[in-house]
Length: 295
Length: 100
Image (cartoon, each protein chain N blue to C red):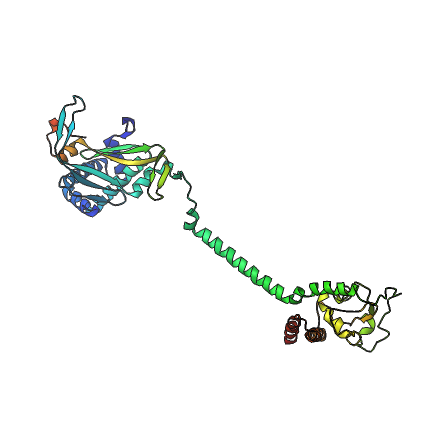
């Protein structure tokens, strides 16, 4: 608003001439004619639209009363037209360039602002997908370990029963290997199959865990020793008897077909015996046996 | 009035080609824009003054958020009508003085 930043007309004309590559006189004449034409147009009340620059337009102002600012005397302002200039965004942005990086600061931060951001939604969707994938994987893992839901309880109550067994044959002197006794079970049995003497507190679960390496293979031991187990109850074994541990062709972590058949038979046998004594777990063991036999 | 009409009108008045008139108009507008961008003011005779106004940081109502906000410092282009044009447009006697 001060005069020190004003550009004189002849220097402005020189700048325009250099930019348009014409002589300074031509530019000066052009600027005068330009202003004159625009003034004429505004006098007739028309709008002037200049591309990427701004729009000039006039508004009509009715007659109104005011007062002389010097004398305070009332004054009637006649009706007239008024020229307005509306700068377009290209001009506004060019002028506001020094303060372009400044932003409007909300006094009360809007907590729902993230909803308008696409990145937040993408992140949310990815998170949900990740959770779904994790859930599916966890579900698969649980169903492969299906038997794990049942045996720990069973092992606990089996342990209790084994404690209260009425055959207090605690003085079993030594472990008698069963392999020499029954070498004809499988050819591989000579090497791996050994006997285990059940002491009070032992469970098929624990025996399978220590001797076979995986407690979920306990029905295999049960099936192997079924003729000796007179109680016909998978949850109850007498202390003092010798359990034969079947030899696996593979290992519990990478069983081959024969081992899986053994396991299936064991689970089926356990399910049958459970059903005979009316144990509701029969259905679950049946289910596991059915799945293994399908595979 | 459109920009092309203005170009044609000025070209006819000055007796130059439309292309030259357009080049000069573009040069004029861009020169004004660039000068305003570095903070200068440009006065065009019989028309008015293109100037810039700087608004300090202030508090104000923001309709988009229906709330008050702090508006940052900004510089805007302003146009002040020249006295000669004002008298023409107001259509009043110059000795009375044009109302502001």
